[in-house]
Amino acid sequence: MTAPFLLIGATGQIGRNILRHTGDRPVVALARRAEDVSAGPQTSVVRCDLAESLPDIAEGWPLEALATTPVWALVPHFDSLADRGVRRIVCFSTTSIFGKSGTRNARERGAVDRIAEAERVLQLRAVERGVGLTILRPTLIYGEGQDKTISAAGRFIARFGVYPVYGEAMGKRQPVHADDLAAAALLALADETTIGRTYALGGADILTYRDMVERIFATLEKPSRILRVPMLPAILDVAGRVTPGSELTGDVARRMNLDLDFDDGTAAREFGYKPRPFLQGGKADLMGSSF
Image (tube, rainbow, N blue to C red; front, top):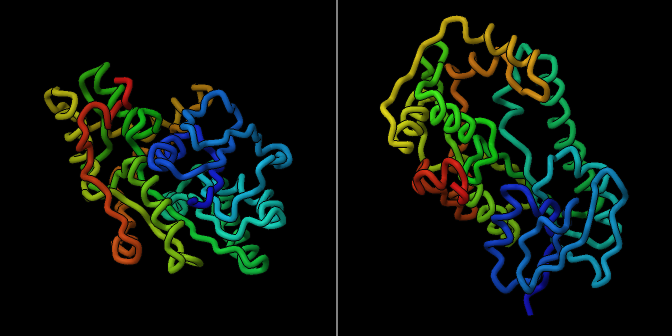
């Protein structure tokens, strides 16, 4: 019988796809809202709020774990996982620690510092506790209709028929499907040569920001109407301040002209990562399976 693995974060866009990939392999899935987990017959769902202590697991703790939660949320529980016998962890961080490193926004700077510090602590504790750690850093994630970039752009275009950009919008991007990240996590978990390594994960296509938006227009079967707005950074700064919960800042516009393609093919060479082309699945890739 195949050994089970622990899935920390089973309801997010990567976690749901991991469960779709597991087949007959047993999984112990931790989720804050257990009723939201689409669980198969081999999946045991355990309620877990990472703001609290880890729960008891009746059947015992697996030796291996995948964590799709924000990387800083894993830090307070790392020693507890090691104490419970977990000896292998693959977790997700983000390439934002590079892409947003020059941001002018204080909230974004704080987030970048928090992520970098969480990675540093996890790597240190992994060595000290004898846990095999692999960190995966995705670029722009799409595919479930939940992301705040690709899907948000699709909804904006569907509603207004235009899309604003700043300058030439020629910065490079590598949008990556959540399902490809799920497959990558399982591949990395099974390959001990990835232990101690950190990988940037992008999609198969490297596109300029402008080309990425044009492909969204094409996927929605709409004529491409990209509008250059010189004051877009100032507009987004104001929008971010007056909109509750918004992550909009002027740097969102400025980054349209920065290259944010970080996947150099290392993951493909070292453990067989093979992402799909951008929006290969059409509108379902853009808006999610419920589109």
